[in-house]
Image (cartoon, rainbow, N blue to C red):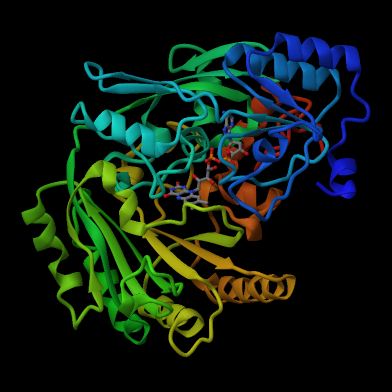
Length: 475
Ligand SMILES: Cc1cc2nc3c(=O)[nH]c(=O)nc-3n(C[C@H](O)[C@H](O)[C@H](O)COP(=O)(O)OP(=O)(O)OC[C@H]3O[C@@H](n4cnc5c(N)ncnc54)[C@H](O)[C@@H]3O)c2cc1C
């Protein structure tokens, strides 16, 4: 570690006696910058954030979380919570990072078809375990994303059109609030907070366990079909008509992607630009194949990976990167995939665009998401039919500057088709700031969330996140 890094993370103003007591109280460990394990524990999956907390608390249970929250408050330290670092929005420099990755307990109740998990649990572990009971959870596309961050931010997975967002299936939450108290939150208890937690992100406390519904899904029909990027307009046009006809059991995406030249990919895809339709059908392989025929038997696909598979293996459909990366992302909800919108997309991301972006993806919403009561929880914009999401990977600062510029160019080009809203989980580095967080919510939902913040976290103790400031606080 360099001298500069030491200074950035060094716990200069912490009372040594209080630190000693804190360490003694913890079942897990507390690591300072000069201690073994600190570097591993401070790392986020998103490598853009090279954070240097004063201390990392590797918590082993709810009592550790309470001790950490109290210690941070008493020592006037900023606090952040991290399970994987996939969704980090601000670095925890000089503060206390509460790392939950060691809290990995999973309890499954096959009778009530629910699971309760601790905050270090990843989706891949849940879906593999519940599979044995003939059940599925509303996991995301990437198995190594954390359950809690994903669920508090909404949670869009391959069953989203059939069963809704993950937040819609939460039954109860245990969390530690800013005053160091533990609260059990459900429809029956602290129901105002229960409303806000489902969609409000990490603004209200540190979740120590979450209980959610499971669904009877074992086998699905899923995969991706790849066409040359030169066919982007035709494939997008067909896709836009096709999604109007498909049932809730079918969730799909379409993306223009510049694929890396890596051995993991089939040879014809390596280093190529492609237009790709991905989908998962929660039903029989026969029905799935019939429903997907208009998309798969259109021209001559370069590669087609569709096959019957276990729901637990749906992480292979998109093959999201497992190794840490530093993606630059941006998102918008899109009101239509009209021919004008398609022309614009092809212009800015298609074969002649010289786009340096890794991916411009559109995910299809609707279905069960739009059926849930508008005020059931803090999720807004349920009517939006599509979410647009761009990702770019840059190696050098010059690359990153160019990617940012191009991302802004794409965003501007798509402006006529935006709803103005966004989904919390898809906010990327191009979306940081209060204005973008406000865009996630309807004005009425945002007002209710600020009221909750005033009630449960008036000092904005939990602010290193996609922050909803209380009415009195500033970042
Ligand atoms: C490769 C990749 C694939 C993705 N795929 C999808 C997808 O398919 N669908 C989708 O909806 N989203 C997806 N996301 C977005 C992802 O759901 C969010 O980034 C989410 O915040 C990640 O949660 P985490 O716990 O893994 O990350 P972390 O960075 O550890 O946490 C992110 C934030 O969540 C909050 N949080 C985490 N743990 C707690 C806790 N115990 N208590 C309170 N707050 C907490 C905090 O605000 C924290 O800053 C993806 C992201 C990436 C990078």
